[in-house]
Each structure stands twice: as structure tokens, then as C-alpha cells.
Image (cartoon, rainbow, N blue to C red):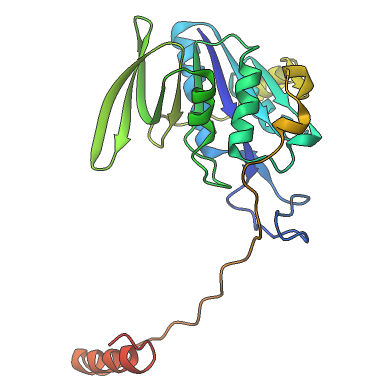
Length: 260
């Protein structure tokens, strides 16, 4: 089984993110970049499927040269090869543009199954995986917490509000991951050493048959980034009894909050 995992490199959720001087992007020079957490589930599930059914796992990503670090981490976990689409025209590309680029790259990579994170924690777009499936005209299932391959089909347990549904789709197909699908493994020292020798191709838009001027043109753009407003200090309600505290609370809600 040929499995392709779509991977995005994002700022670590532990990092302090600052707005860049242009007002429409973030400072990346000193920020720690990691594999998108939902894509880690995708990498782990791809490796488990390879271990169960044989085949290979290819990591596919779009980004800057630094993205190779995250691809190498996925290779150290157990993936077999990586492909990075790197091109200056990609800067400022929106989610649909990234999906279009990934779909074009996938037309040159044999696959039976594509796995992607359900969203990226930096922009929370929820678009790329679904859009890739649409561009490739293959079925997709999102928010998957369990899957199994049965007679050329994939059966997925998908989370919905208040429960789960079970869906089947013929292969090739794409599914996106949800928390609970698995527990991603850590890269071992032998895995890290092996990852250095695994193939990692870097391609431009021209290499995958796309016109840089058209492929990188976004349909949406960021107008401005702003920090959330600072919260006012909280108020501690004091009193000698519950009745006194209740009276003080009502007074605050009336005079300061002006909601009663």
C-alpha cells in the first residue's frame, strides 16, 4: 500500500508568537517550528498501516527550506521518503492554493491512501485536506478517530456532534485525523540516524507542472494581524457572609458591568 501523508510545519504552541513589522505575518526567525500536531497523528497512522499491510509512506509538504527539519522528524518516526515543494511564489499562498499545489504534486506520486491532519493549529483553516481530495476527485472522510482497510475499501469512524458515524469509501481515498486516533511515537536514535539517509526531494512549482504566477496567486489575503485586547483586572468579591457577597456582586454587576 502506497500511503502519502500531508505535513505542515507550524510554530510550536509553546512559543510566543509576535507580529512581524509588515503587520500581516508573524516573526519566524527565533520561533520554534514543529510538525502540526494533527499531522503527527497522520504520520503515526500511516506508519501503522504500513506495518500492518506493507508498502511505503511518503511525506509531502509545501513550505520553506526549514520545513525539511519536520520532514526528517517524520522520516525518523518511520516514514520512507519525503517531498518538499519549495518556491518563492508560494509565499502568501492561501489554503486553496496550497491544496492545488499538493494535488499537482500527488499526480506524480503513486498513492492508495492520503492522510492529512484535520486542521493546522496556526491558521485553523480546515480546508487543505478536503480541497486536495476535491482536486484529485477522490472520496474523503474527515475527523477520523478509527480506521481499517477491508477488501480495497477504508472504513472510518468519524466524530460528529454527540457521537460517531461509520463510513466506507473505496480506495484511493483521503481521510483527515482527529484526536484519539492514535498516540504518535517518538523518533528513536536509530530512526534519527536512518532518516539522514532516506530520500528527500525538493521541487519547485515548475517541477510539478504549475505556472508559478498562477499557482501562487491567493484568492484570499490577510489584511492585518492584531494582538487580542488586554483583559482588565478581575474583581474579587469580599464579604463576611454569603448574603453580603451576593449583595456586593449585584452592586458590581449593576454599577460597573451594567448588565443588571
